[in-house]
Length: 283
Image (tube, rainbow, N blue to C red; front, side, top):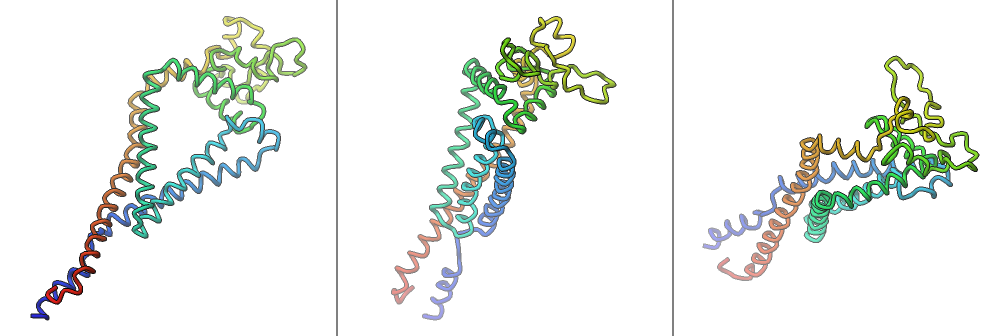
């Protein structure tokens, strides 16, 4: 009788509710984004170290390197909880990972909804950010390259118009401005000619002093905000695909972590049940 009853007990001892598939799938899922986060932080730190000290302190709010570092660090901490929590079957770390990922997902969803509902206020914030970036255009090479790329890509100049470049101390149109670029705009505002082999970096010289019709023969006079809004309206399906692409990994991570947490809890209950009944001679 004792031998017959011993076989189920051995089976119960070996049985586990924790699925290795769920456990290691969640681990490698987090490991992938953990590596990505370390690459982002490394690139951001390298970019910051390559800047001059004055530039490093002048425009922290609009520095792309700072954005990379912040996002990378947050992603690193989040995926660290997921990696260690899944590997060690730690409920606390897994719940932290799941809760943080849920908060990030909800914040993204709320930002999208609020941006759509309060589009005027969102436009004002974007305009404020762009104007701040224009002010620090010459202070940060990364920011300068980003603005130039945006102006060339969207065929625009400034935030609302090309005259927004007067916000920058080098391009300001005031009479007492000693800069050689006074009343000018960056070369990225200039109209492209089909057979132009060499870029004329001085093509925007004195453009702010001209009216829209005269300046429009040489540079883009429309602001980047209107161009950006038009691009967003024309690419709603693309934006929806990007949003879905960001949402799916987050939802998968939340789902896997919750499944694993429930499996670990069931396994703990089974172990407690076994401990309570080991003293039972009929177990």
